[in-house]
Amino acid sequence: MKPIKKITVPKLTSYKKKHRKLVIATAYDATFATLIDQSGVDAILVGDSLGMVIQGHENTIPVTVDDIVYHCRAVARGTQRAHIVGDMPFTANKMSSDKTLEDAARIIQKGHAESVKLEGGAEMAKTISRIVTSGIPVMGHVGMTPQSVHAFGGFKTQGKSAEAQKKIFDDAVAVAEAGAYAVVLEGIPSELAEEITHTVSIPTIGIGAGMHCDGQVLVCYDLLGMYETFRPKFVKQYAQLGMLTKKAVSNFADEVRNGQFPGEEHSTFLEK
Image 1 (cartoon, rainbow, N blue to C red):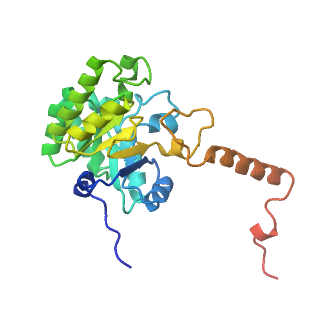
Image 2 (spheres, rainbow, N blue to C red; image 1 turned 180 degrees about the horizontal axis):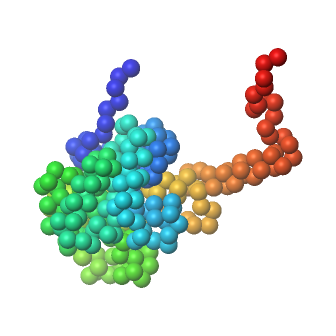
Image 3 (cartoon, rainbow, N blue to C red; image 1 turned 90 degrees about the vertical axis):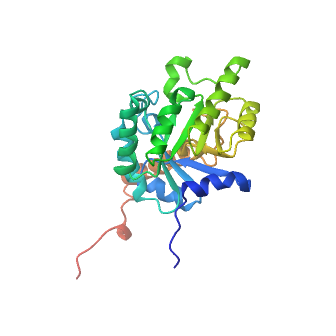
């Protein structure tokens, strides 16, 4: 059996020239990481979205570096092929560049991620450059940055005015020039995402940014249909696992209560 080749940053960046779409999904534990890795995605993002889908918070702000490190380690144990990206949480992004570099190093060294994702545009360019210079690959993130949810007044599409569009465009360019190997474009008009994609030399990863990006990322719980009521416009559900899970657990409960489970085939007996 041939050894499984890890997907590296140079391989990911080469996709843009080859016009090959880059596919990323989130994962937060070893079980999901194994399944998603075996499905053939290019990268797995251990996103600070875990604050909402795992921890039950209303936004991503409470997530800590320790949380990201913990979940990165779990994902790394379940991943053989896909590139692993560890998200830099709110507490890391808003600190000094020294502290941010230290946190990025922890996510790589202790969490076994292979790159980090950092929210912010031009204002984070120097920090991105410093992290990249230290030998840690950085994926940028501009547009609707969830860690700025309070500043935005909620999870809202950004870039609706000409001024806002220019700001996001300049942010993406600044992130690319700072040395990021890719940039997430979240919650922006498709036309703006297309312009950015044609301008920057690095791959653009869309989430709610239309069809012209070099790749796409979705939260695994969203694409698997784990939530029946929460369904943003940019999400396509490829399964309805939330409904199937409730049905399966309900069947289990019914069989336990009526004595169907466990049966003889699920039991061990003394030898006669």
